[in-house]
Length: 169
Image (cartoon, rainbow, N blue to C red; front, side, top):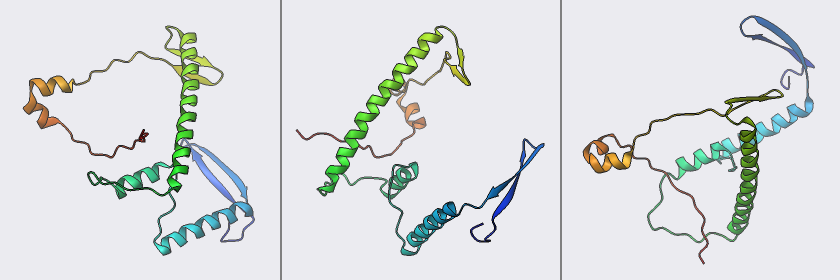
């Protein structure tokens, strides 16, 4: 609608292959302006060959993993003072995460207590399951000790970079 100038448009959908629905969608100039701003910013990045700013998204995580897949052994860098602010943000987020994890675990434990031996619980429009699960896993330590050649034949090597923050004191 931003291109055509129309006041609105109809959209039609077929739900489940047999239920037809249509609806008139009115023009939203505020949304159109926001989309144009986003598109303009994106195209400026493309033209200047500047990657978009990093954020907390999975896309940023994947980008960094591909951009810097391995480290140079024993290499060291003095980070700028601005990294102190990032460390503070990181520490604060970790503290908040621990608080939220504790609250989540408490709610989960209380729900489990209410369910007792039952596998499925319902409340409102929610379904809670707490099922018994059985798994078989390969004991890689024993396999490596007792059959090292077989272990080596089937072992997969993974490579990744581990991120950690420690106090120097």
